[in-house]
Length: 191
Ligand code: ACO
Image (cartoon, rainbow, N blue to C red):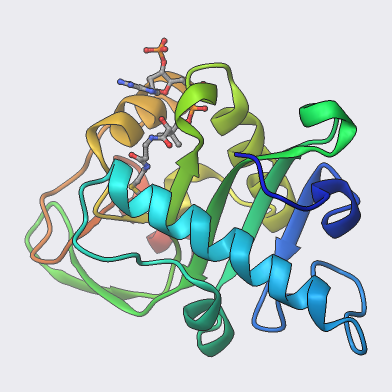
């Protein structure tokens, strides 16, 4: 995904982690254009992700990120676009208190890290970038994919999780979240 400004200037590293402050690990005080460009990138990514998932509205935007305690992992390719860089995609995570049904039909209360949004630019899908970004987040959070919950995963994402992490859906839930075989075993073990 190209932008009319230098992505390498905005995001010096291959991976950036954005939170409520949107600063990507640097001080943007006194540099309002940097902040504005970061907002443009997040808004564009959110729109593209919503379109790809056929959602009526974006679930990721700069203003939403500023008002929620979520983290957005961003992956760039710094060499493309004549050295100005392109944004490859993003992954948004956050903790949610969930009421889930286990195999016995009992309600289990948990607050797992949830995958809330995930998008790789259309022309870059199926080149391994999604895996690279997901693995970076796992390493950063020191977590296993089976310990997380997934908010309304798309068919492509379910296929991705089955292929790369051998995850198969667990008990159908009454909400939009999906957890996988092994989730409840691990939750019980950690209690
Ligand atoms: N059709 C079916 N499966 C796909 C597709 C596709 N068009 N694209 C990727 N996948 C799955 C497959 O398992 C594929 O393996 P295969 O090519 O051997 O079949 C695997 O992902 C490829 O892995 P990566 O290359 O690492 O994944 P990619 O870079 O394509 O990123 C992602 C995966 C993020 C799901 C990407 O396809 C995408 O952005 N899709 C559109 C948006 C979307 O559906 N996001 C998930 C929303 S749900 C949520 O966020 C909770």
